[in-house]
Figure 1 (spheres, rainbow, N blue to C red):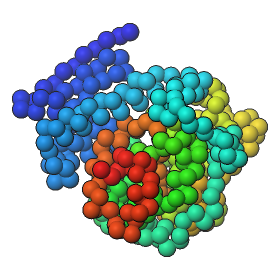
Figure 2 (cartoon, rainbow, N blue to C red):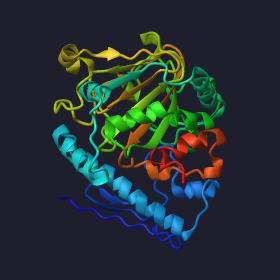
Figure 3 (cartoon, rainbow, N blue to C red):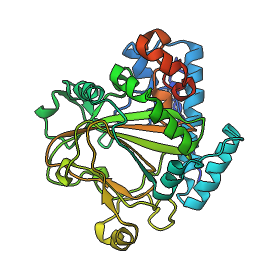
Length: 352
């Protein structure tokens, strides 16, 4: 194994700027970010988002190094689906040894097809409130483009993807109410087990630019936790292909073929699309769909601006999870507290 080591120390910061590599494993410090557009611990402290103490910093660094290397050393060492299934079973045995997943008819169908659709799971007024929060003038970033930032209304730029600030999203009352939906939580637990928890979320605006941008090309998600499910909440109706629906090739999460971490061309996938029945996901406001995004999928470029909320639910953390500034109980809207109290494990990364 090739070995490289890079150590950086800040005079008064100790672990702040430390980075040590050993193959794909890496020790990371408090100023490291897992992804463009996500503020590291030190930036969150500087912005007043977190209160910095020695204990809080040590806890963050310990959790971040665990989460980061869980993904970038253990999880991404190989994308072989058979290997990932074995590791996933081990993870479930460690976290919930007596749990049995996929036993309900709908969970079994999800594991076979990589997809489950829930009609009108959410109140349309709640979806509208979430959409209003996302389409309001604010600071937007792009995880695919380090350094990109747009401040203002989304219609004031033609950038293809605009991502809502993560912490702003996590504190949004509409977002918390969506996450607290009992039926949403119940299906996640059926699909991946009782230790299912929200580990990250994205809210983004896709803009009509006339070409496929980044994840609007065929791909498989390759840096998500071992046991995970993605929950998609369209923030406007998706009635036709022009509305930019998700396109999915069902039943492909377990295939060794096309498991490389890259984008795929249509012609490469033509046979598997025909054999498995690729299709687009159309939805009304309030519909929710659950996807194993290790299956082959892509977004489609929209002909008009549209918004999407997506939750990452998993047993183990994402490499992004430690960057969530946990909400205090008094910050949770009072009307949601009973629902959240009954499902505290689901919110263990979001609410302290």
